[in-house]
View (tube, rainbow, N blue to C red):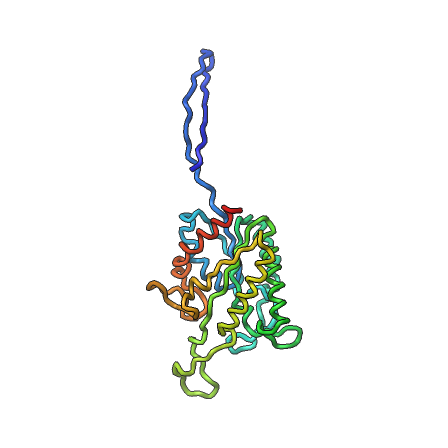
Length: 270
């Protein structure tokens, strides 16, 4: 606790008498660590719970996650078994995050991406994925760009490893089938654990290039401790039934004692 000592002197007009007042100790709280949370809708769902009573961990959080966007700027992806265009604002994430950094002036910026990076993407006229070296190199370039943008105001950057996904839990009914049972559930390419592992590997490799700025926090190991998608931990359902997002607000609230002290410590060591 910081203490400010004030020595006040009262001078009574006309009497010429000065009265010395003893030192007054006024407690001043430590300023909160300002955290900017960037990423996709998975980050957004996590942020709802993280921000609840974040001040108890000496943190304040602003979330600027972009729904439907990661750090890839591919305009077309194969997602959930459907060819779909990404949102136009996804192309503008560098300028969006730059403005957020300038406005909020974070001490620590956090990035949670990965969901859109592991989907099949139409890139330079060809379908590709993170399994291919060329597209993996592109993802690495985008992560490096994100580190530079999110640290542009002097903030430390926390890169969160992506969790595993299981959107196969959403029923898929083949064309012409009169009904669907759980047996119809279908794995999508973006749910493959090996793709998540590849993204997290790239994340770590890029972070090594910025040792004074970037730190990797292994969110994957915390929320998927058995090495595969985990819905419930300690009796708390932390992942949404869609197999992608965190439950709101329980998932983020469950993560607070794990994640928020780490974020506050990043700035403390800075």
